[in-house]
Length: 198
Image 1 (cartoon, one colour):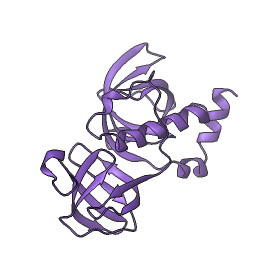
Image 2 (cartoon, helix red, strand yellow):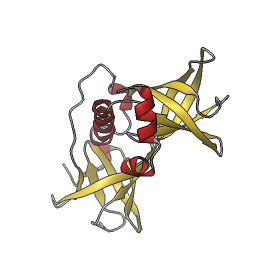
Image 3 (cartoon, helix red, strand yellow):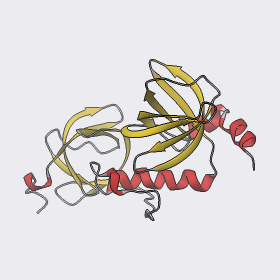
Image 4 (cartoon, one colour):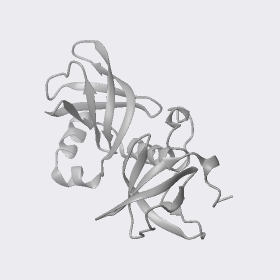
């Protein structure tokens, strides 16, 4: 299956809707094959289908590039849009590599949101099929990550713990700071400051 097939497949609206983008803040490098140049960039959103990056000198649209994401590996892509300073990329990769990226993103959230650099491309990353958070009473509530940063995350969930409650997400701890239409906003805290889970 060639790159042309993948590019056509990725161009469909259904394909784009299949992969939910997560707001992130990863360092990386962007290699522009046609110009044989490499530049530093910041990945600001990511999904199994593509990424949004900030870089100093964005290449033209429809340019073939290779994106290196710190801790997450190397992805061939094509530039598709440039809006408000963010260059949009569509990944050109097989389903198996997309699955590994989804697993890495889930593992990133589950195993410590501030330590993504542990996830190197050559390491085996365990699959995480579902994410949940744990309340102080032991209840486990299913959730999805809508966006994430070093300070906190927004979770899509049917559960609505009260504001101020401490929860555990994987190996990370947080405090519920707001409710929104899809779930809750969580501020990360240092594990040692949480006595309720000890």
